[in-house]
Each structure stands twice: as structure tokens, then as C-alpha cells.
Image 1 (cartoon, rainbow over the protein chains, first blue to last red):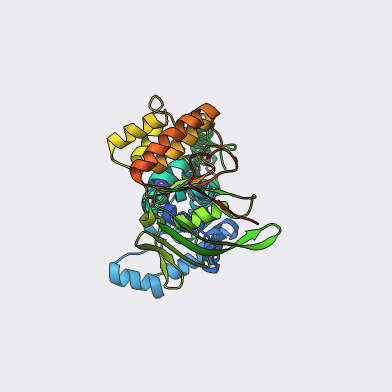
Image 2: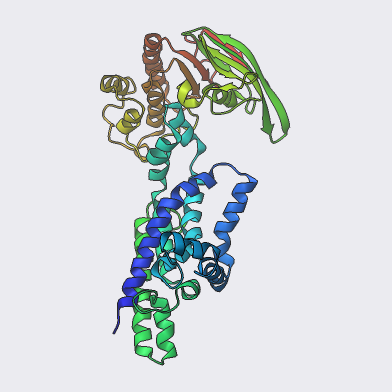
Length: 223
Length: 206
């Protein structure tokens, strides 16, 4: 039984969650403050993966980062980096595809905090960054955990987008969801069942952890 | 001396109205602000703190211009550093009583003095969720005083206190205000609350 798809999936989910946390926190903060047409466009783009077929996103990423075309060609020539059929391509696709799962809950939580919290901090002489770090983020911990778990779990279950940009290369891009599909194609139901059970177990445990941790903080554990 | 001339449009359910204030406040004075709900009392305090910007206005504190909409001057709330007591207290749920004060100042002696003034010295490790309404309100007042402000803006600061505690706290605050030579603007709905303390009144009408 080859367990490399499971490890690869966990590695991909961990890296994607970490990267999205670092990039998503400031972005969600920016989006939570006021409204403008530009922000609406950015928000719509971030939300697109929720409604767009994964294969469509994967197709455009494949075109954009293909070594034969524009950006992909430039990246390969300048930095010797190739996103198509590589692990970094999976990370990029997952980053884009899971963005709404990280940014949505954080933005909502920040918007639900009373405006007077940040205002009180400003009157004490604190900068917006100090306020964000010491007042706002510590008070949205349950939503932060929810966002991280949703992002991680969503990355575990990605199929279409990773298949399009990464293909099915064992040890490199063959993640668990693709391994399940591949096993079923080969009529190897035992392997498909093992991969599926492991994925089911991990996601169930994670969601349970969120429910337990957020029990005292949120009305609904996934809010 | 604080000199205020402002005009700020208010968005109300019934329509729009303009908050117009032209007034001077002596240094070290205490002014009671009162008037009907929705007249703009809280907005006035927020304009003074730099949290809300009026359409037109000029605010000077001693020799410093805080706001001059005609010259494009608008000091940030961080630079104005006015002590602000919010009507909803705006306490930080993640911080204990002591952490609230340490967030505002590093002066340990001043922190201890304030804790005794607000009778919170036995509750330093309590978070707001584990404080009563009156204790929360006192913490909000102490936090505003922690930065030793020259201007204090207080929005209904005594509404949750019992009469005995209120009398005791006001007596303590009088001393602190004198010590800091702070100019205070206090929004209050209680007609007798500031009797014998406030030097002046400002009525804001609808």
C-alpha cells in the first residue's frame, strides 16, 4: 500500500494553510475596513473559487503557467521555476482555490467586532498594526481556527484543480483524492477504500476539534 | 483651553441634520454635555478624539491645531491621545484588568494608583467577562486615565454605578483631574449627576 499520496496531501494542506494564514490575515483585515468598488472586485475574485468549476480554474492556471506561454515561460527562464506538473504548482492552485475559506471567516469575524474596540486602542496612542496584532486578532481566535481548519480540510479534498495543473505523478503531484480516483479506475477498490477512510477520518477529527474548541466561544462552531 | 467650531452632518432614521458646535472650554474645566438622543453628543466626542471627521471645523487645544478642515490639518487619534470612555466601554475581551492598563501605560506606580482609585486592585487578573457592569465601567474610566490625557471625553461614564460608588469615584476623579489639569467633557443624561463638579454645560439640541 503506497501511503505517499496521503503524506503529499497533508504536506500540501499544511503549506497552503500556512501561506494563506500569512497572506489572508492582512487581506481580510483590509477588506473588513470600509467599502469601495475596488474592494468589491477583489472580494468577488477571492469568492470565485466557491462557484467556479475547479476544472475551469485549473485550465486557466495550466494555460497561464505553461512553460510555452507568457508568465510560465518567463518564470522558467528567469527563476528556473515551473508550476505545471510540479508540487509548487499544486501549492499555487490550492492557495487560490482555498482563498475564500481562509479569508471569508476572518473577514466576517473582524467585521463583527465592535468598531469601538479599535477606536479605543487608537485613542490610547496605538497604531493600526499594534491594534490589529494585540486587540483584533486575539479576539477572533475561534474564527481563525475555523478558517484554518476549513482551508486545511478543503485542500485535502481538492481534485479537479490539482489534477489539471499537477496531473498524476506519483510522489510529486499524486495527492490522495487523485489516488482514490486512480484506484477506482484500476478497479483496486481496497486501496480506494483505504485512502478514502484515512481522508474521512482526518477531516472528521479536525471538524470535531473545531466543535470542541469553539464550544464556549461561538454560537455555531463553523461561524 | 480647547476651542471648537465644527459642523458635521448626521445621518438619522428621520433624515439628515447638522451638528453645529461653537464653544470654548477652559483648561482644567469639567463640562456636562446633555440633550436628546440622536442629537450628536457622542459624535461630538468622537470628532474631538479624531475618530470622526466633520465636514467643516477648527479645533485647537492650547497652541496646537488638532483639526483645520480649511488648511487640511487633521491630527490622528493617536497624536491627539485624548482619554475616551466609550458608552459600551469598549473593553478588550482578551485582556485582564491589569493588561488593559499595561496596554495603555508602562508607569507601574500610576497603574497601582488607578487600580486603587477604581477599587479594582483585587481584580487585576479578571477579564471583562468576569466583571460586573459597574466594574467594567470603572475599568473603562481607568484605562482612559492611564495615558494621563490632557483632554478627557466621557460618554455616560457613570451610568452603571451605584450611587455610593459613583460618589466615591467622582471624589477620586476630581483629585486626578486636578493633578493632570485635564479638561473633561462628560455626556450625561442624569440631571444631578455632575452637580457641584461641572463648571459648565453644553446643551445639544435636535
